[in-house]
Image (tube, rainbow, N blue to C red; front, side, top):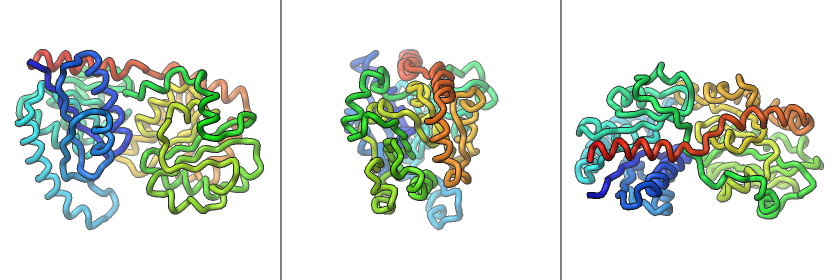
Amino acid sequence: MKLKIMITGGGTGGHVFPAISVADAIRRLQPDAEFLFVGANGRMEMERVPKAGYAIEGLNIAGFQRKLSVKNLAFPFKLLSSLRKAKRIVRDFAPNVVVGTGGYASGPVMRAAQRAGIPTLIQEQNSYAGITNKLLGKQATAVCVAYDNMDQFFDKDKILMTGNPVRSDIANLAEKRVEAIQYYGLNPAYKTIVVMGGSLGAKTLNEAMAEGMENLKDKPVNVVWQCGKFYELIYNDCETAKLPNVHMRAFIDRMDLLYAAADVIVSRAGALSISELCLVGKPAILVPSPNVAEDHQTKNAMALVEKGAARLVHDSEASVKLLSEVFLILNNQALAFSLGENISPLGRPNAADLIARKALEIARVNK
């Protein structure tokens, strides 16, 4: 009888791409396994997962708005509806294990599985566990983590240190450098600054770039600025975007080439971004988003900063300090080298494989 694997998570790339990476790893190890993803309707997983070759069901669920919003009035009703649908999906598919990577749909599906007595595996990406995963962790079979000291949130006997799954194509970047320069139309004589705000974009990073035209004008640098799909129309005509050495894009379809081209990287401090930066091994400036639960991005960033593996710029200071910090690294070869040397050992290229093996171990026991 085929093993049935259910994977749930999504909302942003930070939850979707790890979920797909784990599924791909399970498929390599167990080619005849049957998969079903569960995501949130209207979110990126409903498009990305089928493109990766997997079936997906959607729940009508959205996150609770941390700022006062009329959308929160509908939240309890959407949650109840999603819990009911999740219960039906779990019952009908009857998985041997459910893997949760976080995001809107993950909570209802993992809860439904646990109530049905189905083993669950939590893939906790951050250095500070959110309230949903802390609650789910009490009944989870295993919790795969990427940071030390996670026994403050979960039973230490359930914890497996795996790191976060990242896309496999970001290995061996040095040999892609020439291709990357050509792909993005960059000047090969210049160093390259990469600014990325995640799949949805980051308002503060975009504002800092838009206001930084004078700092970038006539400078011998390339800039690849990923603004996010929600901000493209807003910033497409700003003066910075019109500079010949600035290349603004809504979304990056070849992250491997973007990383290969980079000499310094500016990023939010989401779990997936940090895991990729560790594997890439290049100087990074982290600007944690203040609009996340438990301020977990700052905690993620500090785990690197305290090791001398990244620089930190607070969101409130980005418009003033960000570009000066970028040029500090570009103009200080010793600092750039030190940051790269300190971040590289933190990369875990086999994270997806470790999580996949644990999921299969659990599934086989429950077959």
